[in-house]
Image 1: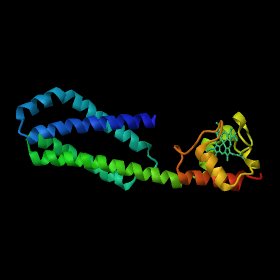
Image 2 (image 1 turned 60 degrees about the vertical axis):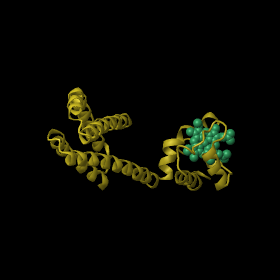
Image 3 (image 1 turned 120 degrees about the vertical axis):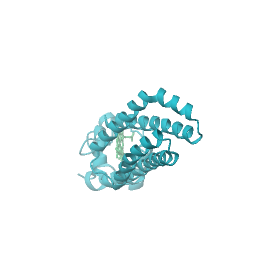
Length: 201
Ligand code: HEC
């Protein structure tokens, strides 16, 4: 649900930015008639896109466990750009219109930055135990002994740390490789969990 919403949000943001990019270019190049025609043609589309953009944005905000400071800056930028855009395009005030466009782009850039930080948080926030429970119990079970689809008993493993890392990273037979879905740190964390909490128990 949240991922679908995130994709819709991106789509709306891209469409919104595109409409504004065209409007800004027309305004700056003094193509007044074209601008009027474009505004008329895209009036409904713009309303739908703006509404979708805000609605999906607000929904996503409500889903965030904690809102990073950067997100507040982004929201202020987006909110500030709205009156600037309304006045800018109505009065054909080039500076205000450009400023509002710059604000939108800046907000977009910040969103990307927030996303990167969030991915970083996730690595440190997720312990080896949580990763194990989410990704590995299906075949290995909570205690490592389940043995689904021929999975080895992790409580009885004789493997060295590096060999465990290698199997998680590259997979083996029925077990998939995790190098693309887990980071190096996450693989380390889950390997340590196996060695300290499952092995020999
Ligand atoms: C689709 C089922 C499946 C999932 C999910 C799975 N494994 Fe495995 N795992 C296997 C199988 C099958 C083997 C035995 C591979 C072989 O040696 O043929 C295995 C072997 C291993 C071994 C080697 C044990 C030994 O002593 O040889 C380790 C370590 C391991 N898995 C860790 C993990 C971790 C950590 C995860 C989660 C990130 C995980 N596995 C998820 C099926 C799975």
